[in-house]
Each structure stands twice: as structure tokens, then as C-alpha cells.
Length: 536
Image (cartoon, rainbow, N blue to C red):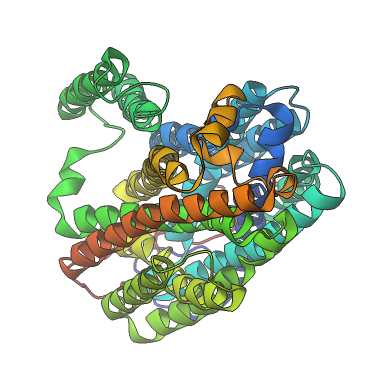
């Protein structure tokens, strides 16, 4: 039997005791959902060279992670509003089903662009799972206690991330990369069963007006900007009509979006949220952190395989120290925030640790050892654990119950935009810098051979260990030198992103964390859901 918090209640201790069981049941479902989503993010990274070597599309290899993030970015702003109308649980389960369908399609992909499409479907599912996890936690757990739970949720991401890269590399080397996607399916089924049976999240049904105009213009505007960033300098020149047209379309669409939001009765992204400096600067910082996180996850394996010359298995294992450190600091910082009610110092300390790690990475060359790489990644992981979940907590603590879902979705939207932009920007820097870097170390005749094979100036054509193993030693060494030089500005860009996040965090005004939850988890006796006290 679970208890439901009511207004004016004076029996807070018993309510907490009754709610804790329900909270744990709900939280179990969220942990499984986080596990499913995080496996998707980390299993694939070490296998990218092998996948593009088999399916083709080497010059466009970054589309494999970017397509999922692009879909997530489009879906996220709509997910929170739909959950207000239809309930958190049904939308959460829908996300898991869509994600599972995308995983199955990815495993069956007959060619490169079908895989990109299947990853887009996966990303759409993630666009529901990730923000609704945070919104559900925001509903049932007070901000003061929320740091502890979000720390554990972040740790579940870290645990899956620890297993993911190593398992991804092992599966790729010993079986088939297709099993990287099929392995998601049993976890998705288990999550659906647990959520259906045990996740009981109250939802107060109200009449809502869907902001269709705002949703469409925001999604298309973001997609246009991301496509221009991804294609600029690679598929098309920066001054080509395609890139200029996409950026122009993005500006027009986002301007129309603002027009819709000013007039919509229930905007998908209320512009008044940005009047809060806490909300604005937290989202700016979140974008920077997401950029650097996914830059590390997807480009450090490039360094490990292409410069150091390790296998896919080893490149996956090299991510483990970073993610293990992330787990430890996520749990520790969450506990510390819950005990002290303070978060700003922890955020700044985390960003300083990330910056220190990226400073080390910018000094890497072909002589860098695995030990030095591990030391840098531990620093980055410690910083990520202190920051990733905390910005969501900061935003949730600054808004009312009515804006909780949409504010949480906005935070997740910022993170998705940061992830996609980070990959796009870093991928563009790498691809453009690689051509000139290789020309420094390789004779023209070798470069002409790369051009003839369709692989010149593309990162994917030179960091595949299988390809490098069959090249003459002198040419392989030149490729490693060139790739190392091309990766240097990529990591410098990541360091600049951390600096932006640090400055934005300095401007966040720290306010006390509330000690009351918005609602109580579990079933209500009469089926009606009553709000808890919503003091801010």
C-alpha cells in the first residue's frame, strides 16, 4: 500500500515511508530505461571503422551517431508536452518500443544509409526515454533528495557505458557488429515488463492545446542548422548555395518558431523560461558539457585505433576508466548535493577537472602511451559525473510543477543539440584538417591512390586498423602522424567548449534546493492524483 501526499498534511514521516517503496519501484524502471539508452550510445563507438568498412559510406561515417542525436533533438521538445497530455508512463513505454524497433532495423541494415535511417528511429525513441526519465524524477522526488537519485541514475548510465565500449569492441572483433544492436532487444523487453508492472506515476489529466506550429518550426529549424553544420566543408563548400540555404532556412524557421511561441496558448518551449538566468545559463553550460562528452566518446577511439594502432576491443576498453570515474563522481556528487543542498561549487570543480583532462589530450601525439591516455580520461570522467545530471537538477529546482516537464525537455534538448553539434563541428574539423595533415607526411603518389579509392581526406579511410595493417610501415606511420595532427584542433575545440560552460556556470545564481516533491509515486486509492506542496 502506498501513500499519496496531500496538501496540508502533517504526517510527513509516514508519507515518506509509504512513498519510498513506490519511488524505488518507479526508479527501477528508470534505471533500466537509462541502461537501454546508454548501451546504444557506447556500444557503437568502437565499431564505427568496422561498420563503414563493411557497408561503405566511409566519408560520411559521423552520420551513424549524428542521425540518432538529430532524431532525439527533434523529438525531445515535443515529448514533455505529450507526456502532460497522455501521461508520463505511456510515452515512456512508447519510447522504449520505438527504440527497440530502431535497434532491430539497425542490426538488419543492408547498406550504410539504411543504417543511418535505422539509427534515426533509435534516436526518436531516445528522445522520449531520456527527458521523461528526468521529468518523472522531478515529479516524485524533492530537489533536496533528487541529487542522490539523479546521481544513481547517472551512475547507471556510467555502468552501462563501462560495459558498452569494451563489449562493443569485443563483439565487433569476435562476432559481428550487427549484434551491437540486437543486444539491445532483451534489455528493452525487460524494461517494458518492469515499467508496465511496477511503474505507477501519478498524472493529473488536464486539457492541453498542442503547439503544432511551434513543434514543426523548431524541429525543422534545428534540423536545418545541424545538417548545414554536418555538410559544411565536406559534402558542400561553406559558401555553396546548399549550406547558405540551409542556414538561412534555419534562421527563418526559428524566427517563425518564436512568432508561434509568443501566441500559442501552451507553447512547446515557453520563451518566458529564458527570462530566468538560472535556466538560460544552465542550458548554455549543458550544451558545452554534452559537446565535450560525445567528443571524447567518439573521437578518442579514433585516436586509439588510428594513431596508437590498437584494435576495436582495446579502443573500447580505453573508455572504461573515464566512464568508471564518471560513475564514482556521479554517485559521490549526488550524495554531497543531497546532504549540503549546494551544487555550484561541485559544478565548477567538475568543469575544472574536465578542462584539465582536455588540456592533457591536446598534447597527445604518436608517442602517447595508453597510461597517459587513461589518466586524462579519468579526469574527464570525474568532471562529467559532477555535471551531467546536476544541470537538470538546477533547472528543475527553479521552475514550478506546471513547467517541470517542458523545462526538463528543454534541458534535454540543449544536451541533444550539444551532442549533435559537438560531433558535427569536431567531425568537420577533423575531416578538413586531415587532407592537409596527410599531405605533410605522405608523398603525392600515395595521396592520389587514396583519392582514386574514394577515401582521401576522410577520417574513416585512415583510422581503420584493418586498413592500416595492410599498408607499408612507412605509409602507415605517415597516416598516424597526419591523423594525430588533424585530431589536435579537434581536442582544442573541446577545451574551448568547456571554457564556455565554465563561464556560463559562474553566472548561475545558486538558490536553496526544495525539500518537497511535486507528487507522490504510486497508485492513489481513488484513482485521483493529488499534488504535493509545490513551494519553490
